[in-house]
Image (cartoon, rainbow, N blue to C red):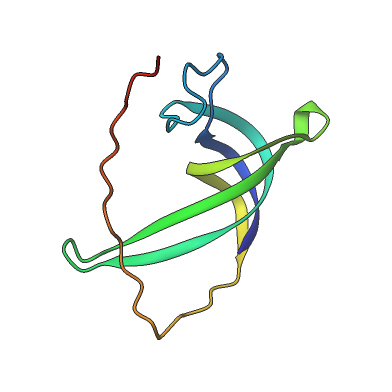
Length: 107
């Protein structure tokens, strides 16, 4: 988990009505001057030898009466520092499994 002040951040979101509310959302929302709190997982991908973060966050825009947004974090630029608590899970081994998504039409 973490708390941070971010100069800017991008989260998953849409401004328009979603055609299929159950389908994944691929668009993003850009926010500036936010205070953030979030949590997630860091999973190791042995195939690429990389760590893959999966983070959800709640952000409040300081310049807009702390107007809040909550979603999946895509990117962020920390303004000063981030306070973070990391808990290592030794067992069971956490892996990343890639899932293919398909869209279907509904009648």
